[in-house]
Length: 289
Image 1 (cartoon, rainbow, N blue to C red):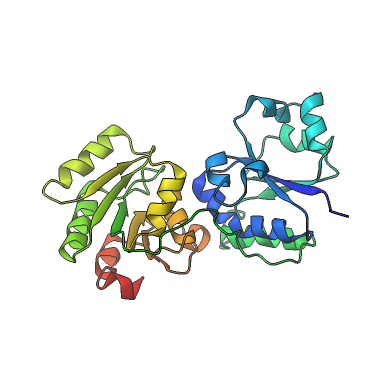
Image 2: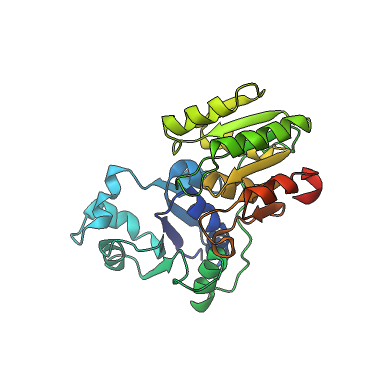
């Protein structure tokens, strides 16, 4: 008999979601044979799950999740799950309360450790599942895209959703010139968090530098660019977490948060905590990342 499916509900941003991949892999493996569905951003979730197991958290049909009142159509759908796991730093109390009315087993998984506890968030999330009895592997689910093997030059992604985390335009330009001087084809990647004034300042500092500008690519295109990069250099951002998880050779600069807790995870990811260290570590980039 096939066990009932598990529903993971993820309320975080892109970086938070990528850091949850090991915990989501554990949920997908335990119990064996149970399907994992994900309620979240469909473009992100589609990286690791097929479309029929992805549910858009912005869809109007899910508004009833945040009410204690019964929602007949929604609740009928929820009865198909044996377990619901809410990934959030502080979920709205109505969300788990509604789930508990319909789903037999509901867990709230804190996505970050308590203040002062220096444990990486990915390990913290997996540890919470282990304490609840899950004993399967913690391998992230395989990415569901045909990814290039490399040879697409360097990617510079200086922006971030937090202003204190982003790279200053003059220092980003210094690193861009270094990359070009070392023979890298260069792509400057700008996302939705980069307001016009910051983007203009970057482009002003980059006058005279040969680079390709890519603005707000769709997630599949972004993933392919990151996976195919010969070198990725970026700030503490969701894009950096994705690049690391996809296996790109990464150098990520942390300026405003603790990399012991929030650092990107990946087989070729390296974190530095100052621009001076980033500049030095670019020589030679492939050997040091």
